[in-house]
Length: 112
Length: 112
Image 1 (tube, each protein chain N blue to C red):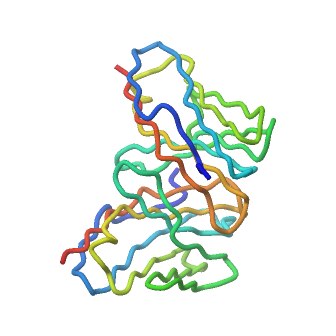
Image 2: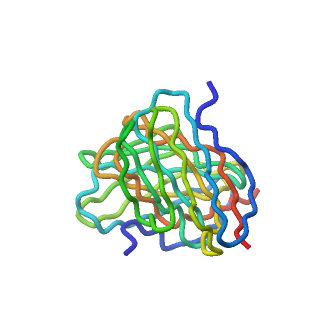
């Protein structure tokens, strides 16, 4: 029973364009949502998060949108850069520091 | 600040052997977790701890034991390794803040 789902295993985008990564969840008790970025042979690193009381959070080129009614969140990267090429995981928890449940990941490739 | 340190980085085990994956953090984080990463499956939570002496099961706990005798250390034990436990294992810790978990660099385990 996958509580957090990323249905696109991969995404290819041209440098300078927008990258949109999507994530769906099934557990309505989730209150915090996070995005992580992972390079090969390294651990995931925290990118951006959002609380369920908000519908948007922005940090530089990265914006996360949350649609609670649809149980859907998305990560927008504008403009995309080749260094953004990595696997992106969305994750959700019921509270800060709580069990963090991850999706399957989406591999983003940004082409020069 | 070393962050989250995992040892060993690589390990090959024979079926039925036992071993302990070590995880230590020097950030005084209360929350710690173990994940495994498999192709197409994302990161799956094995075990979780909210402080010394307190542990809880995650999504895939079978075949793994944990204990948390100190705030700093959270070892993961495989009592009788099976080929299905071939994976990359990540340890992570958190203050319980909104910035999520800090991950170690992983242990790549192969069971033959």
